[in-house]
Length: 400
Image 1: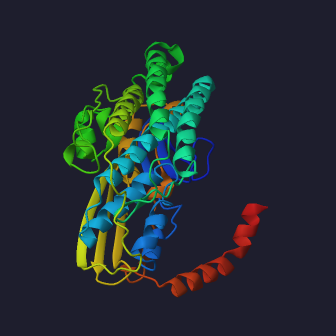
Image 2: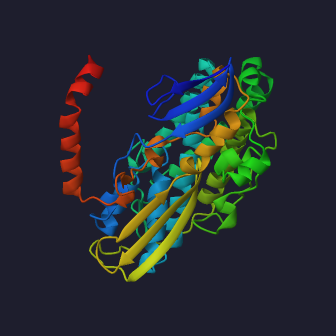
């Protein structure tokens, strides 16, 4: 006999609001349906009311964990709009920030995944090492999250003195730590019991479902924007694609551990080959772009991040559309969770490294007319107040 098990949008295993309806028979999951849209913030619409330069700071607030990738992807697209090419030193620094962020994001994920599996000692290991990366960010830009480094035409800050030496000391340290992590992942019985043969995503399913990032590479799909497109300062760097063929949660863990080593090699290359010269073009903040459109993508820690930008020649964008890697990967959870135990759900879900704040959007549909509707800011506020007054008693009962 089967029954339906709802999990979320508020649940201890979910760090952000998301709802899944799992169809289960006994302890086995036989189907799942995701229900997204609980964390819509209206940032895309807000970007239409900010200048091109202001939006560089707004874009990085879409996600606190991969803020540099959001800001870098946006500014890279804006540079296509303005038909400007940043100086080489600016691109090197921008890429250095991206790879530092990849390391800190993967370490954060490793800690969260181990916490979901009940291995809190490993969680402490990962987050202790992540603190070292955050100290580097603090030395670089004075902030440990949301770094505000990229701007249209380059970066806002040059490397501080002695920063290259700090990177050179950090590289062997993090490589040594990743060797410990890899040995633990392959030999510890707790990790093997909770990750090996759990949440398998076959290579064909990963391709058909459009999986990206470590989720796809853990299933043997050799896909990475850094490899597919020459952007930033990756060309000539010791970059290599890390692929695991097993497709389970353990494979995704190993991909991220090995990618940290690759990022460390790239960091060493960047500081050793850092060119001299200006770091940005000093583009006037009130400069208007030509009528143009741009498609920009980067390899964020979770996978392919896409920005579409359209200019009508004014100081503010006509349209900014963001497609995040979590949206591309969320359907893979449905394929991975089938045949698993209910107790495996947290690990399977965590294996894609979900970011709901990045992913969620709101779409307004008139159910009577069966048409989509675009609201102005004033209409949306009026609708929200009207809905709140109508449902006030229900909300009071829920809170009670």
